[in-house]
Length: 304
Length: 120
Image (cartoon, rainbow over all chains, first blue to last red; front, side, top):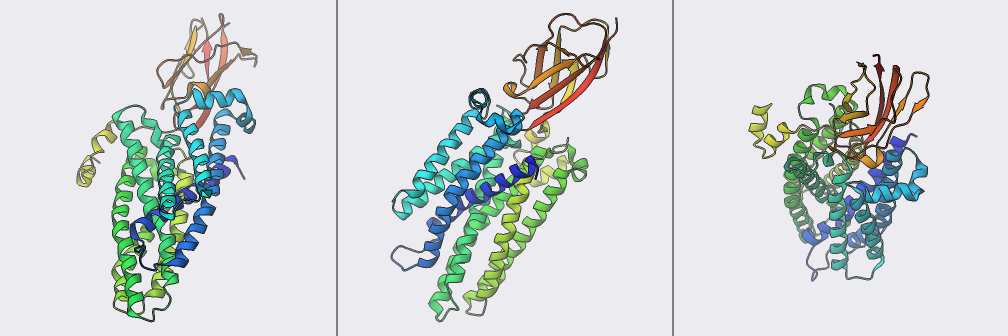
């Protein structure tokens, strides 16, 4: 397994963990039932468990990504422990201060992961830290190439919007799936309606997220590829980008099916729950593959 | 391409076309130029890249035709996409190999080499 592979895997795991840390709390805050109602206790319990796992995973994979980046820059793994190299990395580069910020955030994340906060405060804290982590990622990849200019700022913004919207969409799917599993073969109309309402609420947020993901994704690609569109498909970058786009297209098809076919069926009391579970589950699996493609894409050279 | 962007109605469109930036710093041009023959011994090497580079993690080394290294200074600060290194002393006529490594501002590392000849 090459250094490239190791770096890609660290990034993939990190993306997945931070997406969960942003999207799952967001789902509960925006789409969750009122505190007065019984809500979905099992889904909530499992969500909390998954988040408690995501915290250390995000921290370790995040540190691994930074270490891998430094090792790649300095030409060897030994450099990661060399004080002089570390000093240069943190104090003599554009991204050094942001690397320090990320390490600080990992520490904060770790602490918050075990603090006995109220659930809502805990969700909010995770969401905010995850959001900052996602935005700071922009300076460790292709979006940083613009420098201190209007175009450079636009690149960072496009990247940040892409990640936040993507995390809102993809990060919410695990909770949606949990909720659809918890609502068993509805015995009464109430449960069916409550499940349908939950899907509607998520869907409303997801539509905004999807539009933002697509627009910012187009912007990112134009920034990266620019005039080199002709040679795009001849490069590894182009091939991976194509794979990512196909996966997203498949996700959109499933999301369309959910919103316009499966959920209406469910609301009308007809069988739709199994279809929805399979569809959402598949959408989630595809989304995880999209993150893998993104993890590779960010360290491949775009076409010249 | 412009028409396509116009249809999307994208605010970034104009900025994007004006600044098609390339990630991963590749060598754009050099002084003495890649593969060039120069009459006098150059005082410094100048390498310009397609991307802004991180000075702290970029470097240039010089070797004579027989493989013996030639002393050069550390890269000096200048325009963000250029590395300047001073050459210590005068160089004898012959073929020289420049080996460089650069880290772009997006943290990616590239490396390469090229040659130039001194022939008075």
